[in-house]
Amino acid sequence: MPNIKFSYLYRDGANYKNYNSIIFDNPDNIVLSELENLIRSKLIDGTWFYVNEWKLPDLHFKAWDDGIDHAWHEFESVEYTDEQINIPCKLDEFIAIIEKTDWYIKFYKSKYEKRHNK
Image (cartoon, rainbow, N blue to C red):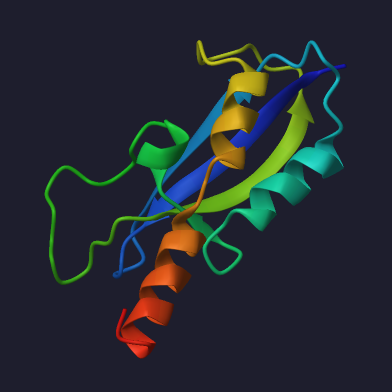
């Protein structure tokens, strides 16, 4: 099977963008639709994620602007590719990292606790 390309971007509040793609080796022949389903199940509102949680390069611009910058990055796509691998992380390691994503548990637990004064 070909390698897998994970594409994402950082889009600030003024709509300026930085793009990146990570190419993973696919020795276990991971099915693309299964990987995409996993990724989408862990995204914030079906679109965003924190690069520090997923151990991906940060695409923020050099100068932080409190008026337009935020912490999350935007998932763009996954696809098969013949491009060369460009990251030392193995695909199965990346999948394990994504599977551990729990921002939504922390978020909803916090909201629940605030509502119920816990």
